[in-house]
Image: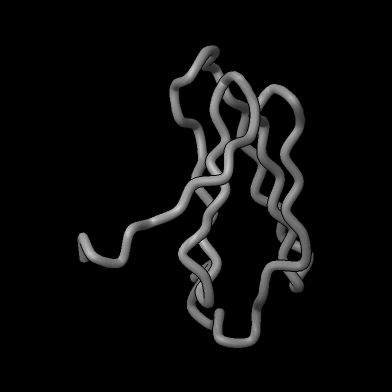
Length: 73
């Protein structure tokens, strides 16, 4: 029921703090919040953008920019 009519809902903002904690706000007022419990190079989150091969990787050590190699797909 919560997501039965999501076609008009979009992400309003994404916030990540220095610890990898995540907060995603949606246009309907919903908020998804998650706390990271890792440190070091372990991956917490990965954000993709549709029109590029680059994506942001959040690890316990901070943010990284990664790129997908099209020849591998």
